[in-house]
Image (cartoon, rainbow, N blue to C red; front, side, top):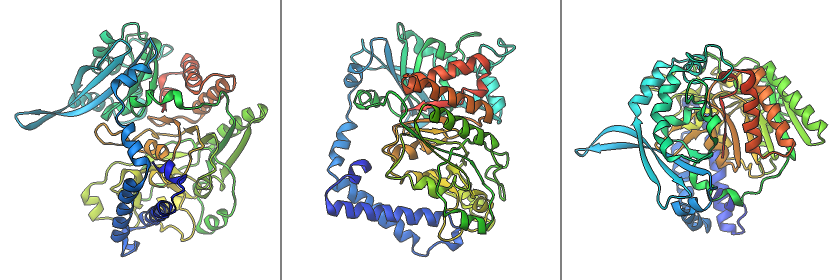
Length: 495
């Protein structure tokens, strides 16, 4: 709907839309300030913004079309499935017994070309999943070693023991309905968003990507739309962000905002993420990542633009709005912060950054760019310049509709608050709202060197004529021959 509003010739509608956008920009700036420094009329701006949004929905000619698009029938999905393909829509719901919500369950709707209606398959209770996640540990390395297994990993018969249990809970019940199926288009729900399905162990030597060509969607409804999407056979242009200078003093921040260049990001989350006074360390590996990818594109005579050091800024990212490249590759720190407890909010100290205390999940996830440590450490953002923390809330307001692929070569960019079956309220949703077609995002903290290798391998296959999906699958298969899942399985291609 936002896309159609941008192109609308209705002057009244455009005026309402522009006011709504202006309000959202004001709100983003205010939310970056400590609560005590925010405008006294903030509540009225929030109310006005909500009213404008409702008015846009009702007056937009695309509103009716939007509602119709949500009425996609299962028969429509079946028509667009390949003969050897299945669509799986995972669902999470409260089981009601005796008029009370007894527990939360997971299930799946399965569709193949032979089905006139979806098959409903109950899977497990959420508490069973939670027990497995709790047993896996709190660090990325512990979780990956317990859940996932690669063929080249030593002690392959003992690694990933919990992964077999996870497979039995969420996938094994589906297998009887997937005979002769080679391709699976799926949409997760709830805690399933944090699972690397492609690396899930089936037995001591096989993972799920050995059996099926997997493609994740925000909804399997999109299977109907995929033939309408035009995809360039090869990359045409790329803008890279990386090697950002996270620590700048106030004078450098003001001076540095006058430059304009392109940047690439690789996300690594420090141990003190979200704590008072925490800062982000430099990522030298992202400098090499940007350099290697730029050389690859240059050698193939493909247009490139790189933003590094002080130019890897929030200003330069936002400047792409309305004129975005085909590929946007961001290698930097990324963050997703848990919902704050009420006590911390009530006892808020002045030197704690506001993002850790935000209610809106789109304000608790984002990307760290040049100068971001200044505001992250609790200092008041400098008036007139961006603070270097590009939240999902701000990214969602950009116009990146020309961008076919966003690569968030960073940590935990796939994460966010999960609301029922509505998807992830984080960077995924933000870039989708901005109009991006496909995203490569990560499920856990990713290592610099191997991430750069995966990305350059992926781009190499795409340049040779493979589709984005096939190039990504092949790059992960190549990495799997050399490395354990920790180094390659974090990344997921989402449509």
